[in-house]
Length: 385
Image (tube, rainbow, N blue to C red; front, side, top):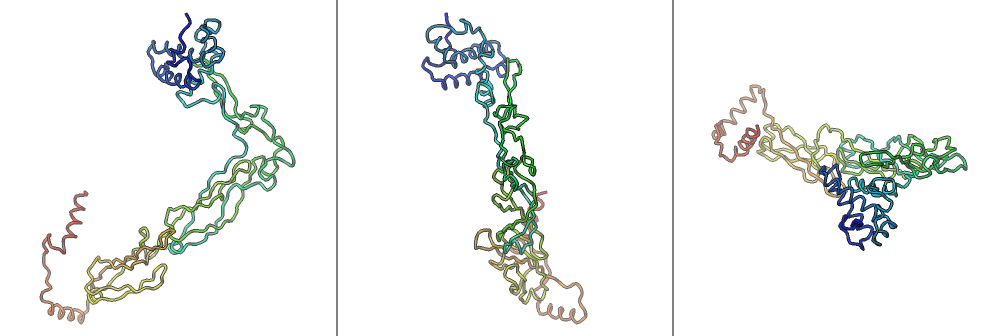
């Protein structure tokens, strides 16, 4: 009695080729010896492979539909692992590895000589002022450019590329190896044409057939205002020209921001430290700050300023990238207490102290408003140990 090949794959007799193929892949993933070492599963895997070989072949399927068994009538049991049934073996690999070039027909197309170029990266140093105002940097770039002799063709004069004799234009060569599954067809890029499918018998004398040459060139890189350290500016099509004169990749310019003598940058804000004498902190004063974008600007220090307070100049920081807004300039006030006093200065301070009898050194409560911030910071530092 003829075997029920449709039943082995679990498909109807009117199943399409795609339905048969999907059913086989599903069963192959469940029953393959590398996945399921059970002897019964291995035997069923052979039957399933034989069923797929038969039903994927139009002539053999016609024999099954007429009530015959093409394997018993000359194909031989287990023919799914022979050369005649190699299409099924290709689908075993496709079920596990997502396809295998050359197995069961198909295969990759030739890669072609013309390929897109790679992106390039270079770094440029900018001062804080250059990051703030934006600048055009003139950079020297060493990349591959289009060969001006063959204009990317890679050929000499009027010569033309020819089909590769090794791979016949396929771009790959195939070989058959034996494994525990039988014969396995593998493909690899052609060593002669490197996957292009064609060779150049008479290459260009300047580029050697590559269609490009290395050259040093100068480019102008526009850097927008507001860039920061580590940011990259993209210059389209300014990178490497591809093999065969392919479209050039992009050039990325990475910003390396140099430290400033006065300001420390935090995003769009600028921070600086201002030393304020004790008397100026008590009476109040003004300080001129030479800002990055606005030049000398007055900063007001209010009377009675305490140590570690900050004074803010709104909108005097760095510009936000591609925006009209700006950050702030934040001045951290360092109150300076004199360490050496002459006799006259000492007498004056003692007279002042006598006028401020309420001002006495004392131990403050941890719950006082003045100390709440201090003790919160202390508790946080000890808990973090």
